[in-house]
Length: 266
Image (cartoon, rainbow, N blue to C red; front, side):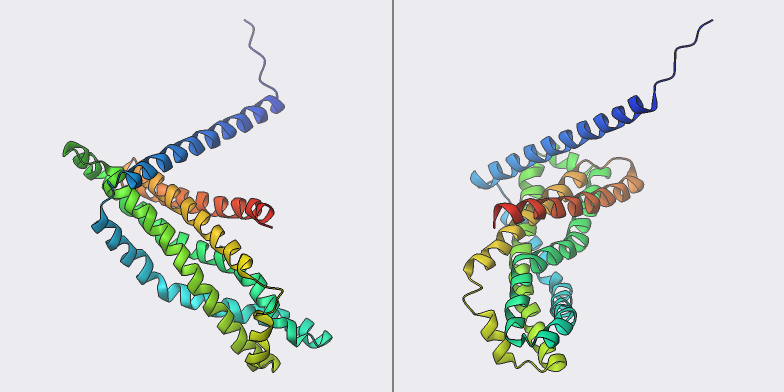
C-alpha cells in the first residue's frame, strides 16, 4: 500500500499566502460593496437623520475628553523630544514650524484616528454585533426596513464627521499644548512659537493634507466596524471576535493608507 507524498513546506507556505491574499481580496470587495450601499442610501436620502444625530452626539461629543487629553499631551511630548535640538542649535524660531508641520500633516490625524478607532469603532462593532446575534437586524428586514439605511449609513457618516472635526480640534489643542510647553521648558515665548507656526513654510495645504487623511481614516474605521458588526455570528464570543477584528483591520488600514497618502499628497 503506497502513501501519497506529503506536500513540501514551500508548497504549504504558498498555500497559506494564497489563502491570505484571497481573504484580503474578499474583505476588500465586501467593504467596497458596503461603501456603495452607503453612498446609495445617502444620495437617495434614505438615511435615518434621527439616528445620525444620535450617533453624532454619542460618538463625537462624548469623545471630546479623550481627544482633549491626547492632543494636549501630544503637543507637550513633541516639544520635549525637540528640546535638546532646539537648545543645541538655538533654533527657537523653528519650534512652531516643526510642531505645526508634524501635527497638521501626520501626528494629529493619525493619533486621533487611533483613539477614535479604539473608542468609537470598537463600540460600534459591539453594538451592531449584539444586534446581529440577537436577531434584531433580521427583525428590521422583516419589517421592510433596510439595515444599511437605518443603521450602517448614519453610523458611517457619524464616524467620518466625528474624526474630521476631532482632528481639527486636536490640531488646535496640540499646538496650544506645544506652545505652552515650549514656554515652560525651553523659554520660547508663545509669540515666537506662533510666528513660526504662521510662517511661509506652512500653508493651507498642510492643513488640508491632514484633513484629507482624517476623512480616509474615518471611512476605514466606519466601514470595518460596520462590516464586522453586521456579520457577527456565534453569540457573545462572536461579538468579541468581531471587535478584535475591527481594531486590527482599522489600525492596519490606517497605517497602510497613511503611508500611501503621504506619497500622493506631497
